[in-house]
Image (tube, rainbow, N blue to C red; front, side, top):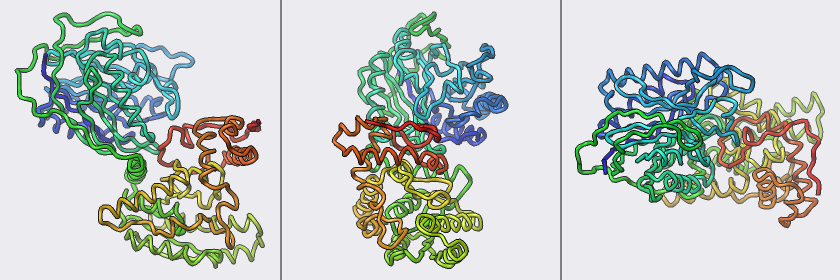
Length: 584
């Protein structure tokens, strides 16, 4: 057996900020070196950020990434870190691929490189390209066709990128065929609710298939509507967990491993899936035996509600910071949605950077402003009251609106006010809509849908209530003040569009509605299949009609943190002009 000290750097990066991303790699490499690591590993496309989307098709960006990689290798050498091999993800291009119809322009590669002694000594590209959910990698990249292996201190280490583990075949069985003692996979796999269990079982299975210890390093942080939870995992060849990183935290997992010594003859030739072995020897001799100092730790894991809530906090924090904002603005109605958004915002950017505005109209109840004031008192956010009645009366006097047009006018006046304050004071506006409302079109364009980000866009209404109760309970358990007023949780949900109006005037009970929506939106079930689950046929037809006719509204809603397998956006792409309707 041979010994190897591995440093898995679970860090965040920002798309397009190559300078800051490289700086982060240098800083964490130094941390890895100080810990005595023999190999420092960084996530998929950490140098460019992930996902880069159509930036991959821009030659100037690809060349900037390639130049940044070379500069990073040289800098590591200058700063005395060149002897530590560093595995880093970046954007490259194929030198061999000829331009042709159906191939991404410039033949970009989702690549990684091993940097050593001032230069890239091995580069390779992702073999399996995902093309489902939020992924469009067939649009952006061409696949790699090698099995990269480095011999490090007498151990053969096979390398892979994200989907190479998620798909059957390819580099996992190839690693076994090549006799690798360690398989390292770098990843930028987005968070989804309950995905941590799936991920663990996947890594266990792949380790057994590869026949060697397997390290799965993932990124953390947020990028637009995606959030990354980290959850890096190392398992032995039998699938036993050796180490596991905390979720939603930047960290360096340092781990001492006992691994099979490499065979005398280096692997070569072609292995599974037609992959050509590319083997580079960095150091053939094992390190002198040493007493392990890093046996590996397994982080305590979040329960389901804590995990979702932390994902929402992480996603909002990343969006605000990475887009150059410091403060957020929320229209506070005293209702459950805006109250939960406010609590998330306070946890994400600090209550001192959260600004709330109550905008009562003639139809607003007394508890509307009162509950908003109580929320502000509990959380410490900045609060003001700005009635819309004078503006409403002016519009009504000029236009004489009635019915739905009158109801929507209130929301649009509030939206105009929020955007005006945003422009004047520099806050980013948060839209408070939830997934149930977005699904059914229960929102007003240019009204409650205004904003730059929707933190609970992918949370059904029943989930909003559950998270609000969870956040209050956790605060109480920790000796703090529950942020959300109890009345905001217990009172019937209402947009207060007219006297006595409640959501159930327009929508089914949320418990029933959300179960139908989960089947139709998340599971792609048809009407007959949903009815077969025991739901009233007329109710199902009504809900599906609401969903189908609201696509144009969803297209105009701001981005928001994705927590489900199918959020509104890249996950679910349906035509706006569409006459197909589900029938029994």
